[in-house]
Amino acid sequence: MRSRLLSAVIYPAKMASIDHHSLDYRKDRPLRLAVAVKAAFPDGSMTASGLRREARRGHLVIERIAGKDYTTLNAIEEMRALAYGVGIKRSKVRPRHWKSI
Image (cartoon, rainbow, N blue to C red; front, side, top):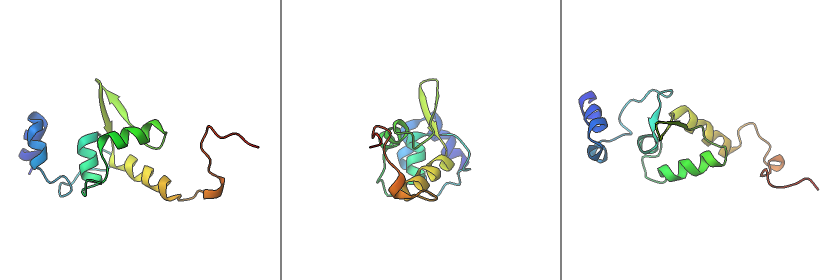
């Protein structure tokens, strides 16, 4: 399995043939967005551009190294916790651009 992952890093075209959900990624390991989205959302309901959009909104931590975007599975779990409102009163949450009346 490790050689398949290594060959996918060297040859990105092979990434489509790997079942990313079955691979055992460490939750704190930086992953390219395309790999992270396949591991965290195996049904294909989220895309790398969707993760970038969430990062622009301030919901997801993304590292940019050499012009490439990386995130961790922990960061995606934190984003999902924010979406579910864990520890946040939903009635008090407002977008930043709203002003107090």
